[in-house]
Image (cartoon, rainbow, N blue to C red; front, side, top):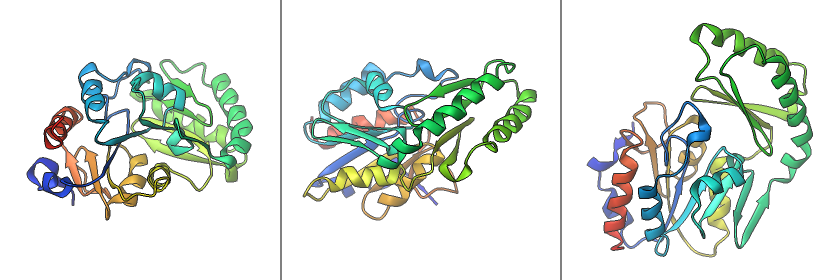
Length: 256
């Protein structure tokens, strides 16, 4: 069971380490919003991240598109990964998963079909991305959600099931290319790019972040937003608001 981070000796475990600090975006660096278009990093969080990036490498691993996440953070010189790791970018790295490119036309066809058949549902939001799309049903009336889900899965049955996979998150379904890749593999890819040993820290809040928790829990600090009995994370923060406290503590530890 995960331990509350601020009651642990986590500070001692990171002293004198080469830290590579990774975050999920929605629900971690920013609060979850009913409308995902309203999510932007706050000035306070941005200022702290900019102040520590000379001593700590920073990466953001999001389910959002690469370009979308970059414009919502706007911090130069950090590592960005979009589409659950299918896209990775910094000045010296530019990676797009090759298999995802070949499956993209199929994803686009499913998206167009979904948009056409879901017009009768109020407040459903389908977010199109480069290699995937996400169905957000948080704002859909509770009594309509079951019918929405039935329609969603019925549409998917008309397409090649071997080429796609469905990620289930907090009031969302995401349709993605069925490739052997995830956020955890993306984090390891970025770390292994360097001929240097790093101590990874990752903070996330959703099911898709479990792949990173599992990938680094024996070599770094895996932290979940919110307490859960079913997680690979070793530590947890009570809520998203504690991110600021975590970053402020980190800033003190590294004297910046």
